[in-house]
Length: 293
Image (cartoon, rainbow, N blue to C red; front, side, top):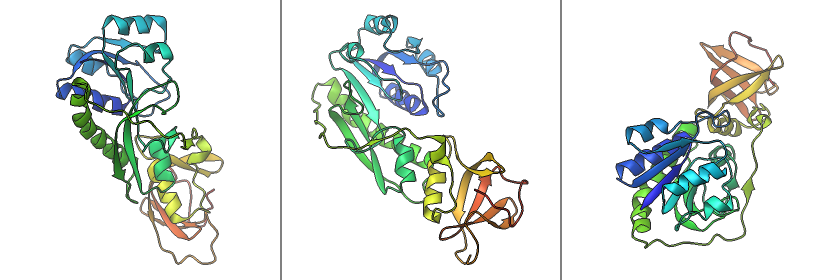
């Protein structure tokens, strides 16, 4: 089965490496040379070169010249894993088996943007990974394979990213032979679903009137490979990368007040106690008694 692979993020790299390890017939790789949009951007050209697979840098995947390049490779299927731009009808209909996409949620629930970040920030207990046949909608095509994973309170973004990759790798093991032998099945998605919106910088701001649990979830959701949560001090954004819940005995202090500084950690009053900021950009800018927004 001749496969053209499209992708430009760390997840794309992991999936391409997995396909190569399975000795899948990848006949072309489409990627980007640079991206200011994806915090986990990866140029896949090195992997393609090492495996002697033709590759092409693109910006507009739907441009006629890019479609022509893909068509000349005579793919039977396209895998599009980790690509932020919509794929239009001409490319969707280019191959006999269509285009397989990926979304890190349990579709049809939680379509849309930033699914790993939203799942953690909202305190969900589980999520999952879904491979599906792409159509002209957003994450709405028939499901090829789906697998659940648990979200623990202590998980940060890097842990969830690893869970996502491990899930997806095991799914590739399962459904690739079915695609190759034409024994796969398609499950139509119900129309009822929710779609997560694009996150803004304001969504990443810590409000110390939040509970300890909500602050932990927010900071962990935005930790690397993502852009990081932040608080405001003297009108400037300061990144916070790691937190832990602190002492709950904090009566008579208002949220946002610095209660204690120990080594490089800062304890701040919250809605239901206090929280330690362990990795951050706030020292040596403040002292005990300082107020952080």
